[in-house]
Each structure stands twice: as C-alpha cells, then as structure tokens.
Length: 231
Image (cartoon, rainbow, N blue to C red; front, side, top):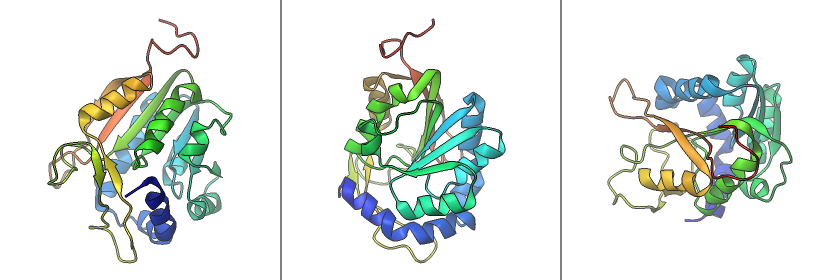
C-alpha cells in the first residue's frame, strides 16, 4: 500500500470511473455528496476556483454553471482528457507532488478537494502548499470519507487501509489503497499547515440516516506569515 499504488489503480480504472460518474451509478453521490460539495463551494467562492483531483471534471462543470471560473488538475492523463472533451474549463495533468513543488504558479479564491485525498505524504505535502495557493481571504474545502462512519471495522487509528470497489458497477479492478485519518488527525493536519477549520458539515444519507461524508471549510490562520491578513 503506497502513494504509487493509488495512481496505478486510478490509471487502470479511469474508464469505468468516468462511466459510473456520468451515468450516476454511485448512489451516495447522487443522494447526497455531489450536492453537498457544490453547495459548500458556492457558499464561499468568489470567482477563481481550483478543483484539486478533479477526475473527469464533473464538479468543475457544475461550478462553471454557477458562473465561477474553474481550473481542474489531476494526476491521471485519461481523466483529464475526458474532462477537456466535455467541459469549457481549464484542465491540466498535474500531481500533488507537482503542486507541492510550486509548478502551479497561480493563486485562487477557493481550493476544493472532493474525495480526492487518498494518500499520506502526498496529502501532507499538498496541505503545506495550500496557503500560498490561496488569495487573501480565500477558502480551502475538503469533502472526504467520514472517519467515524466510513472507517469500517478496523481500529480507529491512522494508517493505510485496503481499497474496495464494493457498491460500484462492474469493470473495476485492483482497488487503490487509502490512508485513514481520525477526525482529530484531520484537524491537526489543517493546523500544521497554517489552516483554520471554520466550519464542519456532515451530510446525511437519507436512506441510511448516517453521515455520508465530512466537509471541512478552512481558511488561512492568523499565524501564517505568507501575506498580511486583515483582522
């Protein structure tokens, strides 16, 4: 289980993923999480949005419909190709490592990660880069698996977990591993990166009555010295 394995898996499964997303085959997305992340972004976004781990571009397209200017980046070339063919936004092949190494020489009003933070070091490095990618007063929004309700039956401790395509359509193989973080570990990751979580949302699946995900809305904290913050 490693960062490299995640990218390998998504390269293998990009085609069935595109089909599943575009044909609305993933129930939790249709019932709750898609709308939840769109509403979260729209509630704070001003103009320039960066969709990190954009996949085939569905979220970027939804935000464009709401008059936002969006750029999407993803490490999987086939997903970016599909995004470019179906959207009017800017889409670029770029990994989190690239972003951490400051290869994206732009800033944005809002950054969003929608179920796209699967690794350990890659995610930690990305978080460190976030403050300098944000315009003053900007927001960083993350939707991810809820640590309490989505962690399965394993111990409630940080660590790598085996992936699964359970609940997905046929055609998927070799599921990507993912790095599990407890709720407190997520908060600590934000804090260590100079980010302050100002709101947490827990979208509830109307069928299971359980939290389908958790959404963190954060801003650069007062301790960040990359630029002057108006109080």
